[in-house]
Image (cartoon, rainbow, N blue to C red; front, side):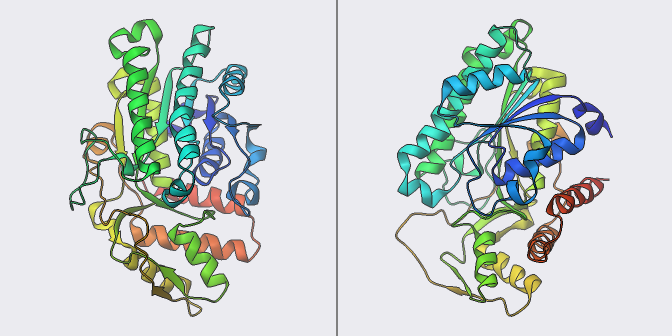
Amino acid sequence: MEKINFWKGKKVFLTGHTGFKGSWLSIWLHQLGAEVTGYSDAPPTDPSLYECSMAGQLLTSITGDVRDAGRLQRAMQAADPDIVLHLAAQPLVRESYQRPVDTYAVNVLGTVHVLEAVRQNNAQGGRIKAVVNVTTDKCYSNKEWFWGYRENDRLGGFDPYSNSKACSELVTASYRDSFFNPSRYEEHGVAIASARAGNVIGGGDWAGERLIPDSFRAFCNQAPLVIRSPHSVRPWQHVLEPLGGYLLLAQRLYEEGVRYAEAWNFGPEEQDAQSVESVVSRFCRLWGEGAAYGVVPDGKLHEAAALKLDCSKAKARLGWRPRWNLDTALAQTAAWYKAYLNGEDMLELCRAQIREFEQAGG
């Protein structure tokens, strides 16, 4: 109830609202009573969650690229937001090998443009108080160890996507130090944080080279899913888990300012950091109908074998905790895709899953 009361009437500027996570967040924010302005390119996939849920009807949608600094700044100024949530990104590791320049331009320069728009907006009388830049668990310099990375561990990234998100973290820290320094909070009134989430799953993801969307496509074609790295371990979580973290973090930034203006991990409990093969085998059982998988190794591109997050900081200081374990997350995801195939109302299903997720928090 506290969160619902907080978001009611808040003006939110959300980049990347047409993407998978952005669409879920748009629906959730609308459900909480926020007034959302979305700024994003067209949906990145066809089909897309944004279109099948009709999420665009719930907000003011502006088509724009975060690489277009002028258009972004004008859109933000017109929206006059209280809170900025930056989700726009090129989010795929393997695509970053194919389009490294675009990946850096969107993920690094795009972050610069968003934070500069915040700075210019407030210099012209705007009232932005809280900014959350969403990066990734892959921003760490991955040593392939089997304990979770903490927020003060070294940043890095082997592939262009992971590295670009580490750069986005550095940009965030520089803007915080240079223009929104916590020691001068009384002057500027802006609190900026970054959020690093694990591997998200959930209904409505149709991106290429992702485990669950690839599974869905294979099963619909009555073909076995082909996986490259069955033993790779990732911190799997339902998409609502990190989104709930972003909402809570933004609220704390707005209400308490610089106490929370730093980096935060949002990932699953340790037992839910599982191998690719474990996740696929569970999803096959949930799907039924003869769903199966096979292994075809592909060593052409580097992918980390192990990655985990230590989320003790978010638990201790934000009071955030995962609500759905991996089995529940997979069951909710399978149910979503089956409902989609049955032609059900996907907006209402998203709303129902959000309500169920909220109730799971006690």
